[in-house]
Length: 411
Ligand code: C5P
Image: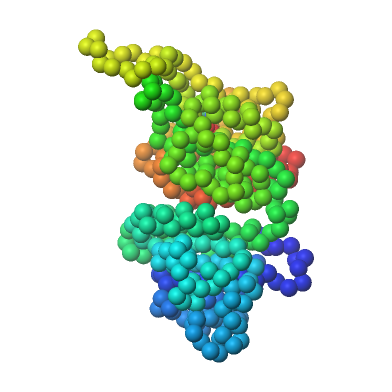
């Protein structure tokens, strides 16, 4: 996707390249950005220069490369404050653990960190680091802080890492970072989902047994939250109705927190009308018929029998609404076998427009994991997408939704 050529001068990116093995991909990123008509200027940290040279970055960007905060010549030509404001968007790729720690804490002891502290422009962060470093509580805190400060994130992806380990920490592919940059630069009213209201359900539900116990499932909310964030990035007003999860709220969406299936249906109804509803939550099929007001005790008469009653089906209820049905209703189907056949059956039974089907057999590790292999099933056929991170699935689905709203038929 390229930006419409309405501006006389190209939009400018300041690309801050951190010192990690993924720095070589930053060179591809320069090309991906320029391919989209963006001007790129690079700042290299001292560590980055161990991985890529200023000559490579300068040749590909066609501009001066900056790396020294105390260079008299650089400072005379383009002061560091000017450098930080002259761009329309700053991209940090790869954003190392160290660079993110500096950003989160407002350190400014080299050119990259100083420019990041001095800027008044949006910042897109593409983290890349060892999986343990990414999962370390210090990095978790820094990511939260940066999100709260308004930074946008793309990636990291899950996969094999240069250090021989596996997990989240790989830098997002350059094409995806470039696409995210294009979306960020697009004026709010020109984004593909601007003016649209999207409801997303996410996470598990907790169905109480007594005041301290509940029935739940392993849903993490990662996929639903990523979809909410992706729709918001495309300009939608998003209401995220979330069951109890341990992940942060995505930025730029209205979050309604619920516990139970009944509470989730009420919240969805209250959020209508909407153009699109994406039902990603793993809603409990049953709840306990008579919840104990007091904690159940062992009374020596053997285990109690839990009598269950069926929960409302939020997806089917919304898809079958006589009035106020969203134009596009999307369900998810977590299946352990015959994934597509079951999804087609579910599409008919639930009355929705698309079912996004995925294989959650334990071997695939989808539940709670970071990647997903999905098939988008509609009355018109099946689109099978390659295995991607949940964030990439979310981006692709948000784009697919935007494209569908612009068409007269859904697939
Ligand atoms: O029937 P099953 O649970 O497999 O259907 C999954 C789809 O239906 C998901 O989109 C899920 O969010 C939705 N669902 C719902 N309310 C329920 C059960 C499932 O919205 N009570």
